[in-house]
Amino acid sequence: MPTLNCPSCNQQFTTPFETPQVQCPHCGAVVNNPAAPQAQAAPQYAQPAAAQGSPFDAGPSGKSRGIFGLLAILVGCFGVHYFYVGKVMPGVVFLLAFLLGFLLCGIPSMLVGVCSLVQGIMAFVKTQEQFEQTYVNTPKSFPLF
Ligand SMILES: [Zn+2]
Image (cartoon, rainbow, N blue to C red; front, side, top):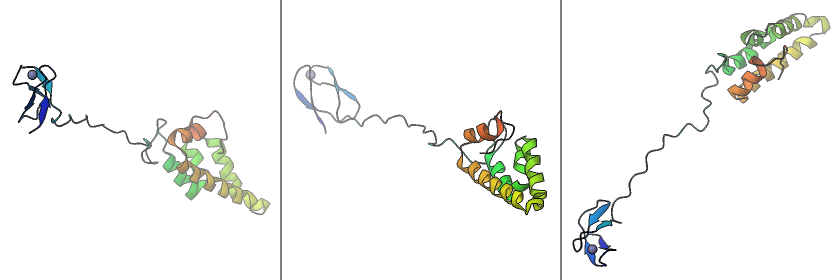
């Protein structure tokens, strides 16, 4: 049983109680009980550290950087990832550069392929916010990276 020291009458007493406060049997003062189990701190409802979620979650713009990234990596040379985010002009440029690349020994095709591969990888590295700033909510008509 915990022994308490009453601050009012300065007498010691023991209590079987484990309540936060007990009454002094000598003077009736209410004494804080150090033996009481500490009140449990309210459980913190921890926010996920990175509130990023899956890259395939659609962001505020309705576009998912995961889908953009996969399109860029798999079929980016056809400009499909640009069509996905509504940037038609660079999509057409990528498509034409890839298809007509043989006119310049395939160099434009290679550039377009490497470019969209990098764009696809970067879409997964960026946050959804950065992704949307770069490709969706950008005033640029030909956003590259
Ligand atoms: Zn007392």
